[in-house]
Amino acid sequence: EEYMPVVIERSEYRPAAPRRRSRGEEGVPPSLQRLHTDVVFPSEVEDSRPPGAAALETKITTLDSGLRVVSRDTFGHLSTFGVVGDFGTLYERRPGAVHLLEMMAFTSTPTRHSLDLMLEVEAMGGMLNALCQRDHCSFILDALRRNLDDGMALLGDCLLNSTYAEEDLEQGKYVMSLQAKDMPIEMHIVEATHAAAWPGQPLGRPMRVTEDMDIAGLTAADLHAHRAEFFHPERLVVSGAGVEHGRLVELAQKYVEAKLPTGPAPPPRPLSEFAPGHALREVHHEMNDKGFVKVAFAWKTVGWKHDDAITTALLQTLFGGGDSFSAGGPGKGMWSQLYLEILNKFSMAEGAEAQFHIYDDEGAFALVGTSEPGKALELGHSLCDFFVKYSYKPVDAVVLDRAKNMLKVNLLTMMESRLVLFEDMGRQVLTYGEVMTPEQVCAKVDAITPEDIMRVVKAMLATPPAVAAVGPNLNNVPSRKLVNAWFGAQ
Image (cartoon, rainbow, N blue to C red):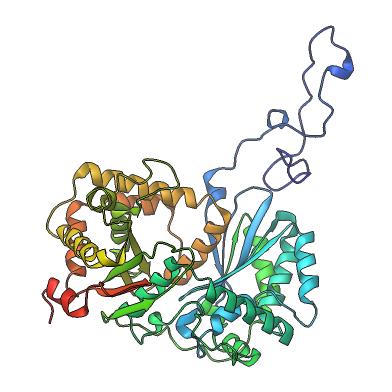
């Protein structure tokens, strides 16, 4: 019944009473005049029109403790809700503690054993997920809408009362060790890029456990300490997509705010100073059977709180990129500038893409290329040449409009996912204290000019890029001295 085309029972957003069904065709037996089903079709409901724009607005409430609640109703059978917090690896005191916290997010509490917890979620028609990154962590439950109350009770219990039992702890560390051994080369280059851009800084710390990291010494005390220090009301946002706001506020007060640790406010977010370094990591992976090398050049750029954040995001879309072979079919992404200027012109380029690693106050814009080891120097030179050109050559208006349309389509279609909407609302409230409307975001994208693109690239070129590379043979990766010479740095 949860998957019928229309909700039969009365709700706050759809009336229940169907109209009288019209008579069928004359001469047809009564038993064949209608289908034998309990489904109420949309045409048979008195008013089945979608809700107005006001009902789709994002709503934010700040509770007495400073805990914020944000939601947007999607008027469907399913809801996505949980907590987004500002307590990622930037803050960890022990390497690997936040990764382990992610593994232990939904484990035993004083009132629930891990197995009972999973069975309870199954009965809700739910799915649990936890994701910890460098800045934020998200704890998520996707379940049938009618189970919001039970789901919030479970989330609050797991988030704030987990005991981190020894059996759960050992299982979590075992899974982490398997993840470290099977880390794909694409994740290795992201980790190396951060280490090269912010060496010795909070943002340069590994986000995930690596094979050379000692996790045996991590204990439940490390997790309890992290929770006690950083699970502060002002660092947390209860977010919900597909929920009624007033009810979510009541449940947040009951199951989250009432159970949060009391104590002094945690220390402010530590800043990371961009200091272009060189991070080369020899990585052998069974999926990289051709022995390709990935080389990244990362420039200092802005964070989310800067006016140029959306311009830099547009630059990433403009550059685009991909691999020489696309599983998505011919033509996918081939109007992007990295396809036109790198992949289509240089046979040694097996892949080229733009990446934008952005945080509240810091950011790094990277070009990542893939080639055979012997071609790494040539590919790196081509990527840097390509990037510098955009500091003095205006982007063609048609090309820029195409990139704008692609960025807006990507943003708007992603917001149709409850999971993406849930996390986006939580992150925006943590960063800005509000949530921008789609109209506001699209207006900012439309206002960007070719001159803005040149200005942003020029600002990045004020500092030479950090260099990172991963693969089985790194002998031909450009040296720090050579890259500095390319950009006129000492």
